[in-house]
Image (cartoon, rainbow, N blue to C red):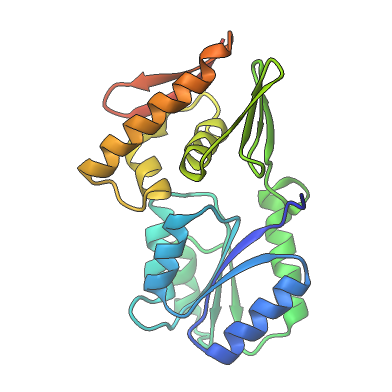
Length: 228
C-alpha cells in the first residue's frame, strides 16, 4: 500500500481549490479539499493529516483562526498559508500563529510543490510519516490497521487505530487525555471521554499477549505506552 502524504487543503475559491487539489493528487498526494475554515477544522478532527494548506481569507473561520486551533492540539504538523496579502505584518502574524511557510498569490504550482517538499523533508523522513513500528515485541502497521504479537494479528477499528497511533507516536511520553479526545473524537466532552476509556480497555485486551508493552494510566493527565 502506497504511503501517500495526506493533505488538508482549505481554499474558498472553488476554481483555485480544485486546481490545487487536482495538481497535488497528480503528484501523488492524498488531498481533502474544504471550502471554509469551519469545515477544515471538522475534517482535521475526523482523521489524521500530514500537511495543512490554509487560505488566509476564508468565510466562517479564517486561516489564522484555523491554524491557531490546530496548534492547540498539534505543535508539529506543517502548516502553509496561501494569501493575497503581502504585508509584512500579515506574514508575521501568520508565523506567530504557527505557520511553517507563507505563499503569496498568484504563485506557480511548481513553487508550491517545492515549498511543500522542503517542509516535509524537515518534518518527516523522506517526506513521509512513519507508519510501521516495532514496539517491544509488537509490530504495528498504521495503514493496514494491524497489530501483530507473536505471529497473531489483530485488525483494529478506525478509532482504535487512531488512538493507538497517538500512543505509539508519543513514545514513552504522556499522551494528554484532552488532546487524544479532540484528535480522535473531535470533542473532549464527558461522553466522548467515557467512550475513549472503553477503547483503551479494548487496546489493553489486545496487548495482553505482549510481555513487554502495556498502556499505563497517568493520573490527571492521560496515558503512556510503557515498553519494558
